[in-house]
Image (tube, rainbow, N blue to C red):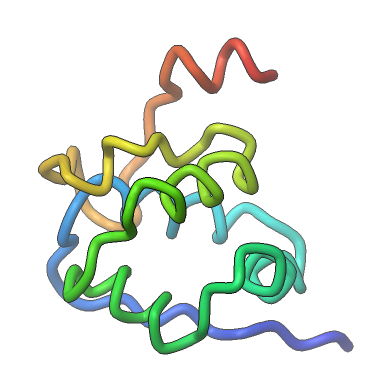
Length: 100
C-alpha cells in the first residue's frame, strides 16, 4: 500500500484557501499531496504553516497551487475569511466550472 503525507488540521480554519486546499487533498488519490508538493516546491513545514494560517502563500505560489489543483483553490481565497469548517461542503466557484 502506497503511503502519502498526512495533513494536520488545526481546530480553527484560518482562511478559505486553506479550507479549499484541504478539501481538494481529501478528494484526491493517495500520493496526490506528495506529488503536488514536489511539483510546486512547497516543503512539508511550509505547507503545514499555510494550513495553520501562520503564513499565506505569495502570489506566485498561490498561482502554482491554483494551477496544480485545477482551479480548486483560487488565489484570493488565501486572504479570505473561511466560508465554513474543515469538513463542510465546498461550493464550486465559477473558475472551477470553467476548468471542468
